[in-house]
Image 1 (cartoon, one colour):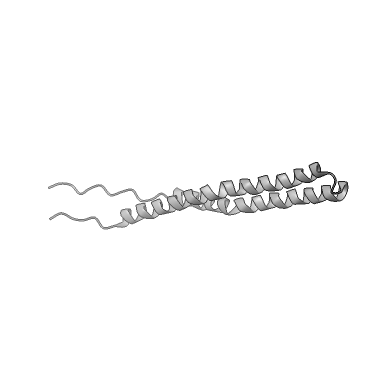
Image 2 (cartoon, helix red, strand yellow; image 1 turned 180 degrees about the vertical axis):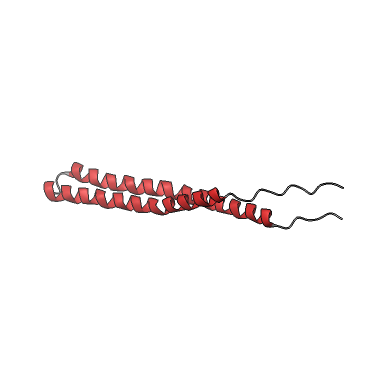
Length: 106
């Protein structure tokens, strides 16, 4: 008689906590990008009000800061969501395998 195959280890609770933390950070990354956009546009409008439309260098510094912060927010968000989705699928598959009844041999 052969022993039954080993059961896979159940998912660890730490993985759930890590997933929640990563999910929260991913939710906040576009908001940080938007905050940088608002601050950059405020800088651009302040330069526009102070120096007028003739000083394009000051205006472009604020707009450039707004665009960079928006891009950073999305660069962090999109791959993070993909990785989080893959890890959730892996977690559910591992949990299902761990909780599945083992087939018994006659």
